[in-house]
Length: 91
Image 1 (cartoon, rainbow, N blue to C red):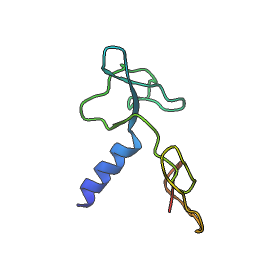
Image 2 (cartoon, rainbow, N blue to C red):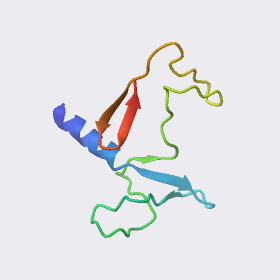
Image 3 (tube, rainbow, N blue to C red):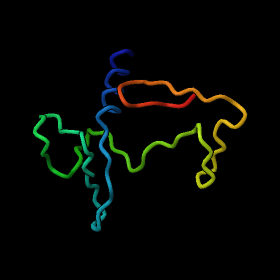
Image 4 (tube, rainbow, N blue to C red):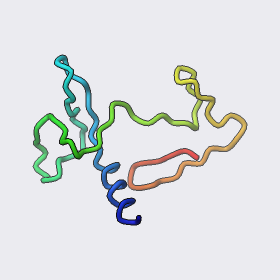
């Protein structure tokens, strides 16, 4: 079970932002400061089938966002915790 958790955490840490191009294909969006796993900074624009991808950043549930229909933590204190470097979640 711990191994599976480590695999999933690694997938999350290395997830690639994508966009759908005019042909309807997934295309990796460059993310400043991130490099490919070989460290060359250059790679193809297509995600591998085994890579975790995302279209949008996760919402900040601590803050009210009427467009998404979330009230945030109105009336409560929201604490941010760091799960790993540069990634914070509100609880």
